[in-house]
Length: 430
Image (tube, rainbow, N blue to C red):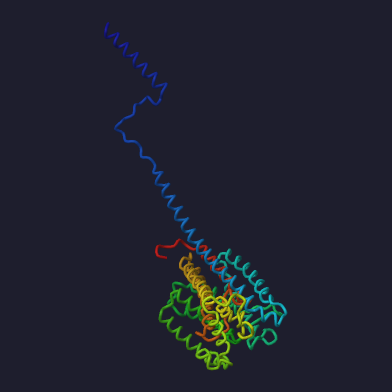
């Protein structure tokens, strides 16, 4: 009897447990404490990785934007200084000969507006796009350089036929040729990077392109532009990895060729002799350099004040073009001169940094070429003004009066800015 009661009680208990499991599925099988819990997904780690990538991207963006902004700021300051000094250095000459002291300033402001628009355009177009125009641009420039030499077509000033145009609206094809040579040689050396040691594939065609343009420029004659082209091409070859033996041979050849060309023409020979001692013939061949040195000396440490230059009153020829640095030194003193020199040094530093951080080889070469172009031209101009180099008639970039030089320089800087904006993340130590 007792067994029957116990069995019935057991059956009722089992039925109650079954009913409870049916109502609560989670209670059907009790958890096993010896079974390890499933591994959680490493979400925090993924979040950390994402944060790290975002941080790297932010640093890269900051470094790129900083270089871009600093380059733009340096060029802007140089252009503003140029506007002020063009007005100061040209006002007397413009008032005497044209009846308005603002004539050259207004023209420079117009060209600066055009140059700014060109800079904004080239800075927003991917620099790789310009590779496809390298051959037509070079061929077109050589055609314009030939037209300059045609009597009745080219405009001759002071014995040099360098301009095309009508009246005061002129262009100087030799300025555009700098950009054409830069793009052509940069593309050539970038495409044939694996054959840089083969002079027949890289060095020879690059020098042939440079030589053809340089020959036409020298026929104008314009030795200053030829020297700037030479500096740019040498920089491109060096950055591309040309052998030191080839670079040494080219350097010796360039020095010898410059000396021979300088002594070939009487006026260039007189410039070279006056460079050695301008005071030996201060009333004739050394007059311009002597007056330039006198103007710089008058400026002293702080200058005589903007607008108060005495050299611009007919004593210093080309005061608003090739010798505008003299007026800067006279009116702003040593401090102002060092400021301008410091801006060009800063431009060179930022240009080299943009070249080092360029995303590809072509970008590196373009950035290096533009930097060598602007810095080399500034060095040649300032060196002539202070009597350390022969006078070659090279304008001071962004500062001297001149439409073609300003607009083409601004276009080249736009390319440099585009390279800087696309630059890669800097490595430690860059």
